[in-house]
Image: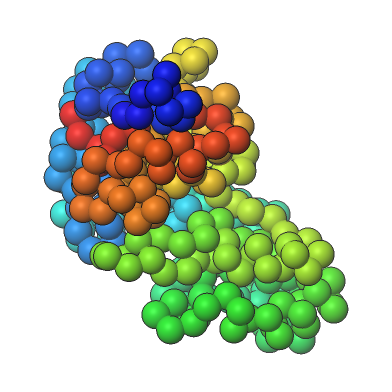
Length: 296
């Protein structure tokens, strides 16, 4: 870490392992993509750390901005090699999206996103419609995130704005890791709609509804309330994970080798550059600590 007395820079404190702080918490709300896996394979050390925390009495709820329901994410984690016993439960922005849509049964919905996300809408009483006939829009991602960028949606967004359509963002992430690459997510499109003055609802981190849902799930798991000040959020994204945790009143642990790896010189689990960490968190509340990758 940089010596603040010499340089004037202060980076978040380096934490050697989750074991150093896990005993201070009853509940861990852990991000998935970039912390538990990279979109292609699980990180064994991260899974082992969460299992150790659970063995010590900490409840672990995975909180993801995935636009699909929790059951879908659980199946994906199994395919990626996340071992049984890594977590207690999963809450996704897809779950929150379904709650929002359940209150709008009968609505005509225009879906922006890949066909693989259509399962998010099953059993909700909404019907799919064209953009010109829709009552509202739900964005789960880009139609083809391998080749498209948010700017490809500018004309569609302008038509939505002209019609005054309510825009539900089922994944507030801007980008996410897929192996060694970063790909755009629904949040990048929602941001453009915001800038146009559109009416937008974000169903995941850093916004309050997903944290309320996760806390309610934890109360069910533990059979009682979670202690004041005893929630730790773990994540790799400043905008969603760390700022979201701070706004919710929770401590956080920042994982440097996720979506910020390039700017922190922390690719492949390398020790992050302290000056770059300072710059990243300048003007923002610091997490309790930082690790290159989650480990016990």
